[in-house]
Image (cartoon, rainbow, N blue to C red; front, side, top):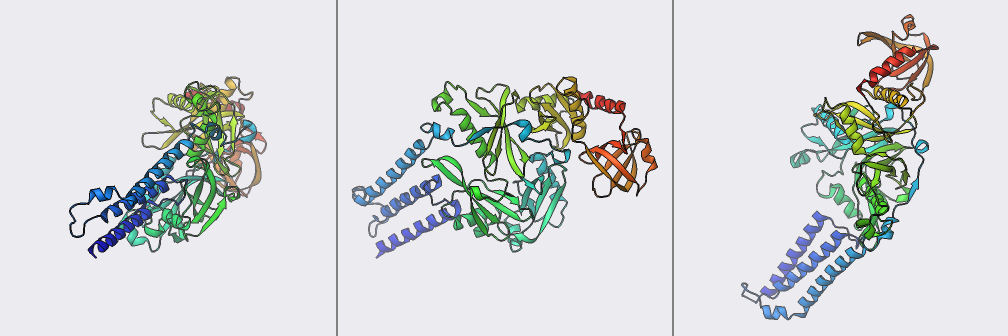
Length: 559
């Protein structure tokens, strides 16, 4: 009876241990999951332990009958199963690796050749994302610190997913419980808000929800988002989750499901995407080709970069990628994001695998569809461009962020934010990709672009010394007018009917502006700016050429 009780107790303990392990580790019940094979190995090891415990003699619990245990057919069978599992795992690793499947890995991603000026349109200044993730984090934490009713209970999560929201480049991140005690105090209502940062205007907003988010990474037990997904989809192997909002601002978790195309563990892509409403926990399961348009991130940037590296390095097999390295290309260190046609594309340079200081081109990879385009544009690596930009402001010791690739007057151009020691963006730089000695800096994007256009003219790249951004026109009555002084010069700032923009009109360029008042109709040609629009003509009177050239000389003075 005691032996039966000891066996029963051992069985209960082992089952509890397995249950706790599954509840905490959350392995997918899928043969393609390495965690699943580890789980099976743990089960077999515990079975061996349980069987060994059963050999404890009736009343003597101090030693085992080792001889009888050693000759046991059951134990031998358990050990044979364990050995078989380990063998299958190791063989599966080998047969899934690029060593024996180089051609299959190289063909995982299809790469098209793109036309730079056709595929990448020139952006207006108010659509250029000026912030990187670190700067967005600073703004988010600063905004959270000003919310006295929440800051003691919640913090901002570190996610800061970059998405397109209503045709704007934004980063979004949910709040999270500050600690376990704060979770006990607030989990009934859920997390009440998320942070939304416009990457172009730097406007930071804490969006409060009518109903709190109940399913997040900082929740515990069954409302933890990872546990919630595992119990609903026990066989799915999820890639990195991202946080997004739909066009109405409803928060969702985007949960890509891995697809294994080579052997047991190799050739990872995305086969499905699960959407989970962060408020209600309701889920929707889509095949990757059926994912809604508003979703921006099914493929993580790291997965896309890895897939392109397979494409670039394995063209002539695995051995060549290690030794001969003929025609081997790889992505550069780092990436950034571009918004094109309501999708987010990962940008990174492509260079020789030998790691020289020049790029042979760059790639854009769609985070929703995996569509990939290669652009053959030889030029400086991003690191070289960053060094060039820092050299222009070396006296200020600003640090360059990873570049964003822009189309400026048909020229591939690195756009770089320059930050001080506190991590705040202080200036901007533009570096020509093909001629990276052409570097312009400015305190604003428009000032930087004007200096860059001037330098391209001086170096024979463009035929016009004028700023070549899109020129817009508007004709409407003035609704508001105000006067200010900038660097000792008078400026009039006006708003017109049907527009929320502010137009900057220097009195030295347009003296007739003093004749106008609210209600008077004006016709304006202008270029978009970050905060105010630059006026080029007022009621048919153009800005004087000499002032334009003087401004270009001043803006280019940091060359």
